Amino acid sequence: MANRIAIIGGGKIGEALLAGLISSGKPTRDLVVAERSKERADEIAEEYGVLVTDLPGAVEHAAVVVLAIKPTDVDEVTATIAGVVDEGETERLTVSLVAGVPTERYERALPAGSPVVRVMPNTPMLVNEAMSAVSPGRYADDEHVATVVELLSAVGKVVVVPERQMDAVTAVSGSGPAYAFLVAEALIDAGVSLGLSRKMSTQLVTQTVRGAGILLTDSGVSPADLRAAVTSPGGTTAAAVRELERINLRTGFYEAAHAAARASARSGSVESGPGVETDISSASD
Figure 1: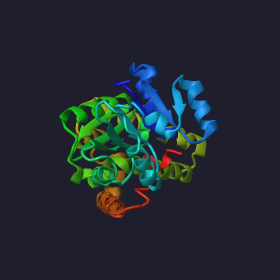
Figure 2 (figure 1 turned 30 degrees about the vertical axis):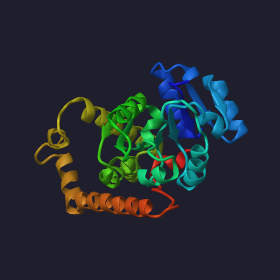
Figure 3 (figure 1 turned 45 degrees about the vertical axis):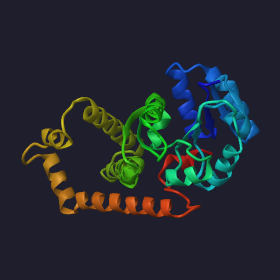
């Protein structure tokens, strides 16, 4: 049982992590899911062949407990976890995928000295392309962090940051997919205004965004140099970029990121705050 990983919450994000772990070679016997909805529990059990049970049953004998729940459920869930005692077992590592909830809040609720690691993932976890940031709590050591990095690597890329930088991470990568989707939405509308059908404009934009993303991640070339390579002097792209600079697009993104960071900081300062709306933990049900 020492290798058991309990995923608390069988929503989209809990399922995405479960699927990623299984794909990476984690034995299903080492995985258990806690899910309150019987219908959802039956779906997960049938699809993945893992044990799906109640919260105390999932936590018992688990070495790692991953919280893929809503911020409003944190107090109830941590209170239940704190009441599950495994005599003679190794210490239980709690991993939070919950938006805006600092490690200190879990440390107060769980048994003294419990290691906690906070994770800020994003919605591309649903397609195994997450960008996750990991921050250790007061009692989490390098081994705990390495365990979490290995887990999250099954669904994307992972970086380790101090918890004080989590608001900035939330603003850039946590909320970042929404910025990209908004740009795509606006460009699709622009294509329609130029006479394209919405279906055609959508196809053009989505594949362009996909290709640009792959080029950005795989080429090793900076965004500025990639943009310059597309922008011929006096050409069509130069005309478009000039207009975007005229309307202060860069300033808009700067202000947007700072607004998101402020919202993240506010959510973390409220005991039962709603979290960050753009974070995937709100998609766990």
